[in-house]
Image (cartoon, rainbow, N blue to C red; front, side, top):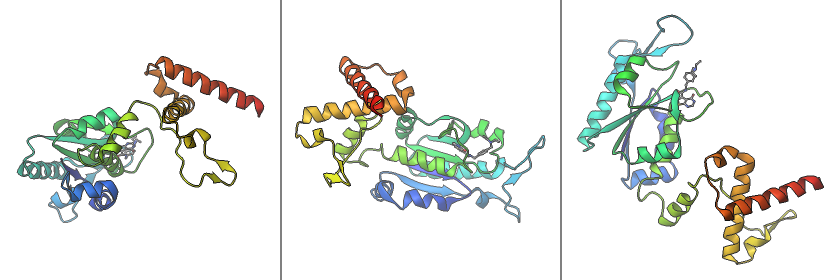
Length: 255
Ligand code: 9D3
């Protein structure tokens, strides 16, 4: 997969290109990356990329022309690399929410072009003309689209074949079932009077799997009840959750 980004701050993307799993995948040639600075596509002495909003109001709006040219350059490069269709995403607070399903769909495309806004955003006509999909990463205010673009890239790249090892991938898949993860423990067996849950030391793998599922269900119920809304529970899951809820209830009463 080829990913190109259009951003006023290309250096910010060093953090995804130079560290961790995403760097390794880049080195292996599993994905390719290039950033395009719209400022390099200006033709005036001031290298101007923004202007005041029509209709008045605070802040500045990114102008069409330099963005349009940067997007065209990015797509031309992708075409030279053999990408038949580039999918253009604008990271914006007005976008649809990024979800696992969206990440999965994006990960199947040969070429992504990610447009990062700054200031109040970009001229709407550029979005109409050039953007396939507008995506937000959540309901909080950031200073621009660069961090959201990197969040998207990180999530997409780890789904590409060969990035994670098979065991890790299978393990991850099992948690895309819409539940929060269970708690994890490692040595020492006791830390400042806090023991590791006994079941994890039992060697009984069926019992351990059942305990982990129960923890996942219970934590999801406590912290993210919205995730349980659209998810049918099996008989076993209902029973495990009911037991967890009872235990919580009796712990509360003891306090
Ligand atoms: C006053 C109106 N604001 C829009 C909600 C102004 C505004 C806030 C933040 C304009 C641009 C930005 C910069 N944010 C992004 O570019 C952005 C973003 C975000 O702020 N939160 C979550 N996802 C995203 S994706 C891009």
